[in-house]
Length: 417
Image 1 (cartoon, helix red, strand yellow):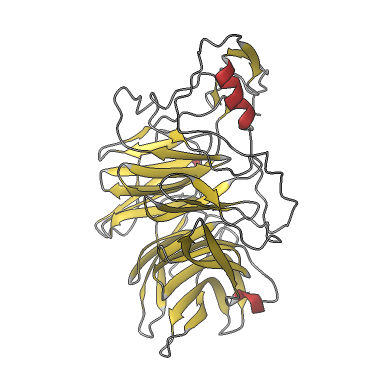
Image 2: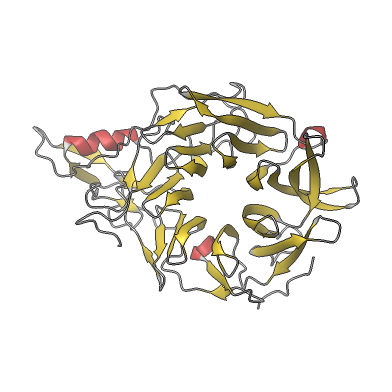
């Protein structure tokens, strides 16, 4: 791999009281100000009554309820990251949808094959499915309460979720109201030390790639490895092999012959947090990786492109980078936020979305990035972790105890802040 040359107290808020109608009180009671995220530890699952119940309906913060009540927002209305006035779903571009997931958990990744086949995963062993009407939990092993960080499928009957190098699950699809998940041994089960699996991606059922926390291995040859790759065998079976690579991979994007990933390689090189790496098939059929100058010392977590000549990457401190026409380095793009950005997706070159901390939702319209609006509940805005859509008018965002849905332009909607 070619190296990249290195580029050159929080305020205390009072807990103000806000007067709201009874309907807003109900909403506030159902969403906490934070959601915990279990890692490889296995913890006791919360009770079923601790579930999100945000609905895709109008939220009335000023109803003529019989008796107005006083609600503690948990944050100051002067804080831009605090919701003191709730937009209704008729006023905001994005609307919350119930998931039945505990408010103690966070959703971390999302993928779908169509608008009626969408999967989201998260902490506490959470795997949920949207069938076009509602979200529903699907069970795995009840002993697994890990955080799933990645979900991807080649189609509705081939879906993968990952948590650790030895915690990989596969399903042949959602049918008859549920899905059967099978734990795949994968190649990581034989490792003396298990690693966090950060993402899963592929191009077909016979080409699946799992990124994990890198480690030095002697077998199949001394070097640093950060991916498992599943390929088809001539006899019809499957083969998992380990792939060399540097950095803690956060996301993949591309095709089988033109692949990118973003990673944090600061453990090896302190200045290499915002690493972008391009892969193409080598002489022996293995992917050869070359680092491309990102012009970022901030960690990059999301990558997406409308094609090989139009690729976007986002990350910490509101970082936005754009690579066009096979340039030798990424362009620095002005950002309307300094919040960390975690996910990016688009329906085309003039319709790209990015999401991040404190309810940050950004949209690129072909000329500039602007903030978008959502009908968040009263209190602290949630961390938004991932985004996916089936098309320009069917886009999902998931994060801390929330799933948001965009269904296209609506009359009277406040699209941007």
